[in-house]
Image (cartoon, rainbow, N blue to C red; front, side, top):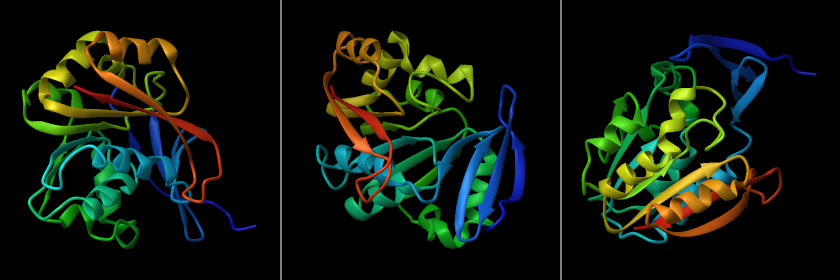
Length: 220
């Protein structure tokens, strides 16, 4: 059995300790005893990007809420054209530092792509400041509408937060929201906010195995 090694720790805004852990060639980001993400499970994060890219043009302006381990960003960059612009808003600075530091080989230079701008801060602030700016907004923040790491994330999923996201999109723009589980109340709230919504069930692993996650794709 290969032991787990804690590489670094950081404090999550609002409280709680986040740890970067390595076991052999595998990486994990932990919150307390909870495994938030793993380098072995990329399927649903990649699906988040693919479902959005299926509905926008190659030169889209995209806002990504939460870098995570970069699976969504790398998929976007592979799908989008040279004139696309991707803004990544990451609330926990250490997550970006880990991607540029101990996980640099795994990150594959995606943060240095000229199409990418990294913002250290709350994606909600970027949404509120971005009226009509984006063709797509991708949210992979916390555990989905049922927050786990930070109660402040909950505002993204309220009617006020959804209305702000709609206002930040161009006509026909896409709001794609990742969640660890289904949530009928949230799906109905997206529709009430004016989105045409598809609920897509995807697997955690790129192989099509693992836990079932949910992505809501809302078109303005």
